[in-house]
Length: 218
Ligand code: VGL
Ligand code: ZN
Image (tube, rainbow, N blue to C red; front, top):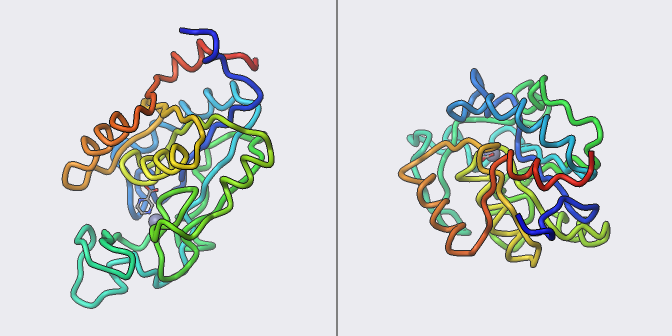
């Protein structure tokens, strides 16, 4: 690996949505989602800077199928900002499903960024809500902190990881997806579509092992 890939103090690990509802037994369980918890715990020790995201919806959120009479989870509807997949109720504010997985151990994480709290707008990305224009504030936070390269890991690969990665790229950050520290939901080919979209952007995908080898902070 080339020298510039060494993890340094301008790098941040973005840990996406490691919450009970996305893990086995949860309301929107990502297949094998729990597997990433120990993997992420391990890789997080390599990073001086870690940000956690937390999907955080009010009850009755517009993205829930239960909010639309006659609709079922995983159907798509049109809303003001375009297509919206309907989900089972998940990550409702203050409920156990919205809590971080109890084995997630990243005490040095510097920021917990909550998203999806506007009742009418979903927010897959850690940077923009799904209307693609409402900011979460994360880009400003990273810039003010002097953090320029974002490593992304977590759940789900084909939704919140994908959107966060695309937006980090759009915001001018260098991005690396740690793909074996992610798991996907795979709705209608969404995992393959994600790989294609990230490759088209030229986003680098790396394994945990490769990232550990680039390790600078010990
Ligand atoms: C997510 C669907 C709905 C995710 C969040 O974390 O990928 N997916 N809300
Ligand atoms: Zn959600």
